[in-house]
Image (cartoon, rainbow, N blue to C red; front, side, top):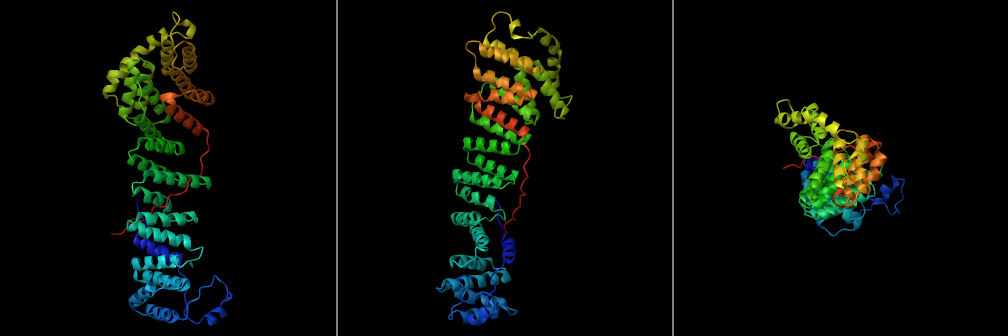
Length: 434
């Protein structure tokens, strides 16, 4: 994770501004201001420190401001009252900016914060800068505390959101870091501006790095839920596959979902789908998926898949379809549950979704039915047909090892009619200097 570079830090501090400091007697200063001397918010330099401040300011005003550095450091080293410590910190910040001395700037920021006299307007940014210095020095716990204080005060600049959870990941505290991402994303989305996709990807990457497959699966699904695309859904499916065991039928069900969401991205994906369908004599699906691969320019006419799978399946389609019963009552004999569902799979491949649903339902009515397979098939057929309400109702009845896939289907369906929320721009932080 990149942090704010030392150069960018100096610019940011200059932009934030430091308090204008004067060492003239307090009575004269009060006369020039509308505020009264008695106001508790007014910074009052002690009589003992005023000459030192004046000497520092005089040195800073010369052509060799570096002469003021030992004076500032000596003042910072003293045991000072809160107002005096704040003033010393402000001088260190100003001189550090002039000299491009980030160590001195950090001392100034810490002194200003420790004084307790930093204004409510400046405190959030100063805590961020202090956290950024700690981050650059790999003092992760200190950086986390400073960033959190700034974040809680409403600070949202300089890429603080990714930096905060990163302070946990740097210490291999993956559950805590991911929980922090959850909080940040929730807060961002609640503000009315959708969190940028890059944040979801960062969290997903850290979940993957944790080597905890449950974390990976959960965050891949969050990414796809927030920013649906072939890439994000493909990643969610890949994560789900790594966390569950599935048979050949379930694998084909996953591939159907990938096809619906545009997650079939490579020749290998199309090959896997076609081979899985071919093993079950689902010629319609073999033809459909390989022709889609051709349309996307992934499968050329000379690809071995054409000769080995597509051409033979095309030859079978006409006779196969003519041999199918058009309704469950046309099946010879009583027809077991698995037989009915196999016919349903064939009709699904031929995109006759009404007949597919009828056969899945017939399969569910038979004894020994695999209820989860049946409802998954019904949901898939309705989803393919665009009957999203019926599909959602079917997927809601799926349990067991198919439940994660059913939940992904429901999420995808909910996205089809959801309006897009405005997305917050991502501000890239500067690279650290070396």
